[in-house]
Length: 255
Image (cartoon, rainbow, N blue to C red; front, side, top):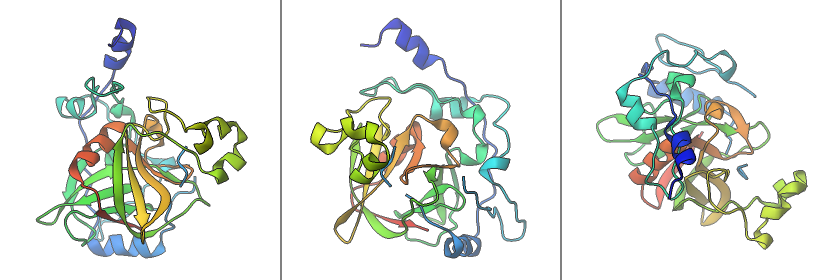
């Protein structure tokens, strides 16, 4: 049951109308993929340029982003408003503070991959879910800091709502205070403060767990940046949307 104070906090969100960026061309995407350093890892700022179009190159970095949208809209209010029907009700996301390029939108597919494939372009901080008829759903993502990198083809072996978080041993060695959430201690229970957020998609390669995840995050300021310990993070409302669109064993390509 949601107490009055908690409900007021959840409902107190802001919203906005997105300026839709021009899509990447397939050639531009592949050029980026060849040069990109991929990142995804244990989940708890180097910047690169981004082409919007081959003929009209636009360069954008997390340190030189456009400011957030100046006004709200019913469209994004509905997309990023509170989700009160969740196990842990999600607050609204103040999306007017986020570069509109990173808000969820359908675009022309720049990847050339089969429909149903997830493609993460770490260089431009986008995740694409390839659809039919040359279209793709695009989500803004946060990626791993330099030094926590992974790339290649794999699959979403399984997915989970409101997952536990278990930091790997390497992360605990760097941050001993995380020992309390180790596998031996049962991990960190799900909730609004859990680093994996509202959903997690678990990435396996050749039958082995890569320990990398696509997951939600309440840290909306981190979208479009390289800040995590490696995993690909999305806004909680976006990971919920992606979770509902993809089945287990969905192919994924990280460039």
